[in-house]
Image 1 (tube, rainbow, N blue to C red):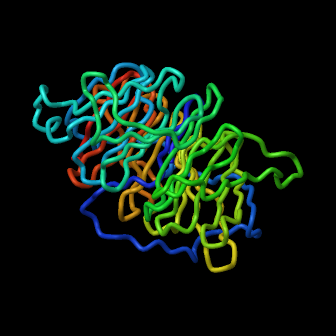
Image 2 (cartoon, rainbow, N blue to C red):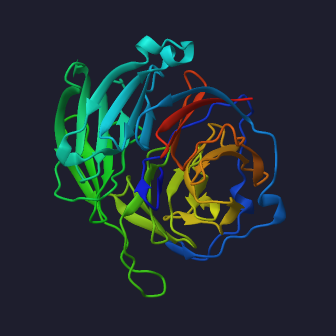
Length: 382
């Protein structure tokens, strides 16, 4: 799930559809840390993992204007709708088929005006059936919107609060557990609230790690959240250089804290849950994950260097590739096995300002990127 130094975004479990065979990752070859609950190490890098010039692997499909900075993106599971949230306090739900057909009159299904007290939405997530859109907002509130009960003339839909806070200036993250029974949201106080989706009751509150390996205090709110694809673990990264794991099969026990070299902007599990990737100001760090003991362990990090901060990323469904967006407005595609860059968006393709979220729609084989320049761009691979 993704985030960045000046805002945070849910990014964790979106997938890319590529017509390449599935790759089985060999965890035995990973250089594992000696500890099983906390790790601190420097990432390794080599010229082959660093910057390279290559033709853009992306074909631009459509560019649309949301208005002000696009803070969050989400496709519905069936690929019919794309939701965007911006700094203008608006949430727009777009008709994906109309976008692909260039049918401008039917681009927008509904525009939702976020309540003034919430300022604007910082994260979005669709329910599995596409009926509900859940938002986390700048003041710490979480609410859900019924897309089957909208009034387009008033720019609103029926809504109810999951949580109301009196924070201001906090970027919340929100996302569903893979089995859709739980919803997770990060809070200003450094905790994560879990709700039962069926009745919206609170299922639990996850506490962060407070002590670092060197005895110092770990501080900071979570910048990003990601569920493992098997649903067992939740990983949360912070700008204060740590990633925490909780085990959902062991009463939400905190089982691993990784102390990272740089602040974490976004975090994601590979589809087989054997790797963890996270974006930093230096690029992308990759770690192998080993679950053969009671507590998971993380390997030493490998750095895929990028010229600017990686704000958002996601894995391909076979785990072979990573798709990322950075603070310069550039998209990049990375080969996980080779640990190297495949290519970047051309200057004429890239956003004018930083990319805050990338996501993928497998139903239409379509990528989307949202930027602080106020635009959303749709892409396919060449």
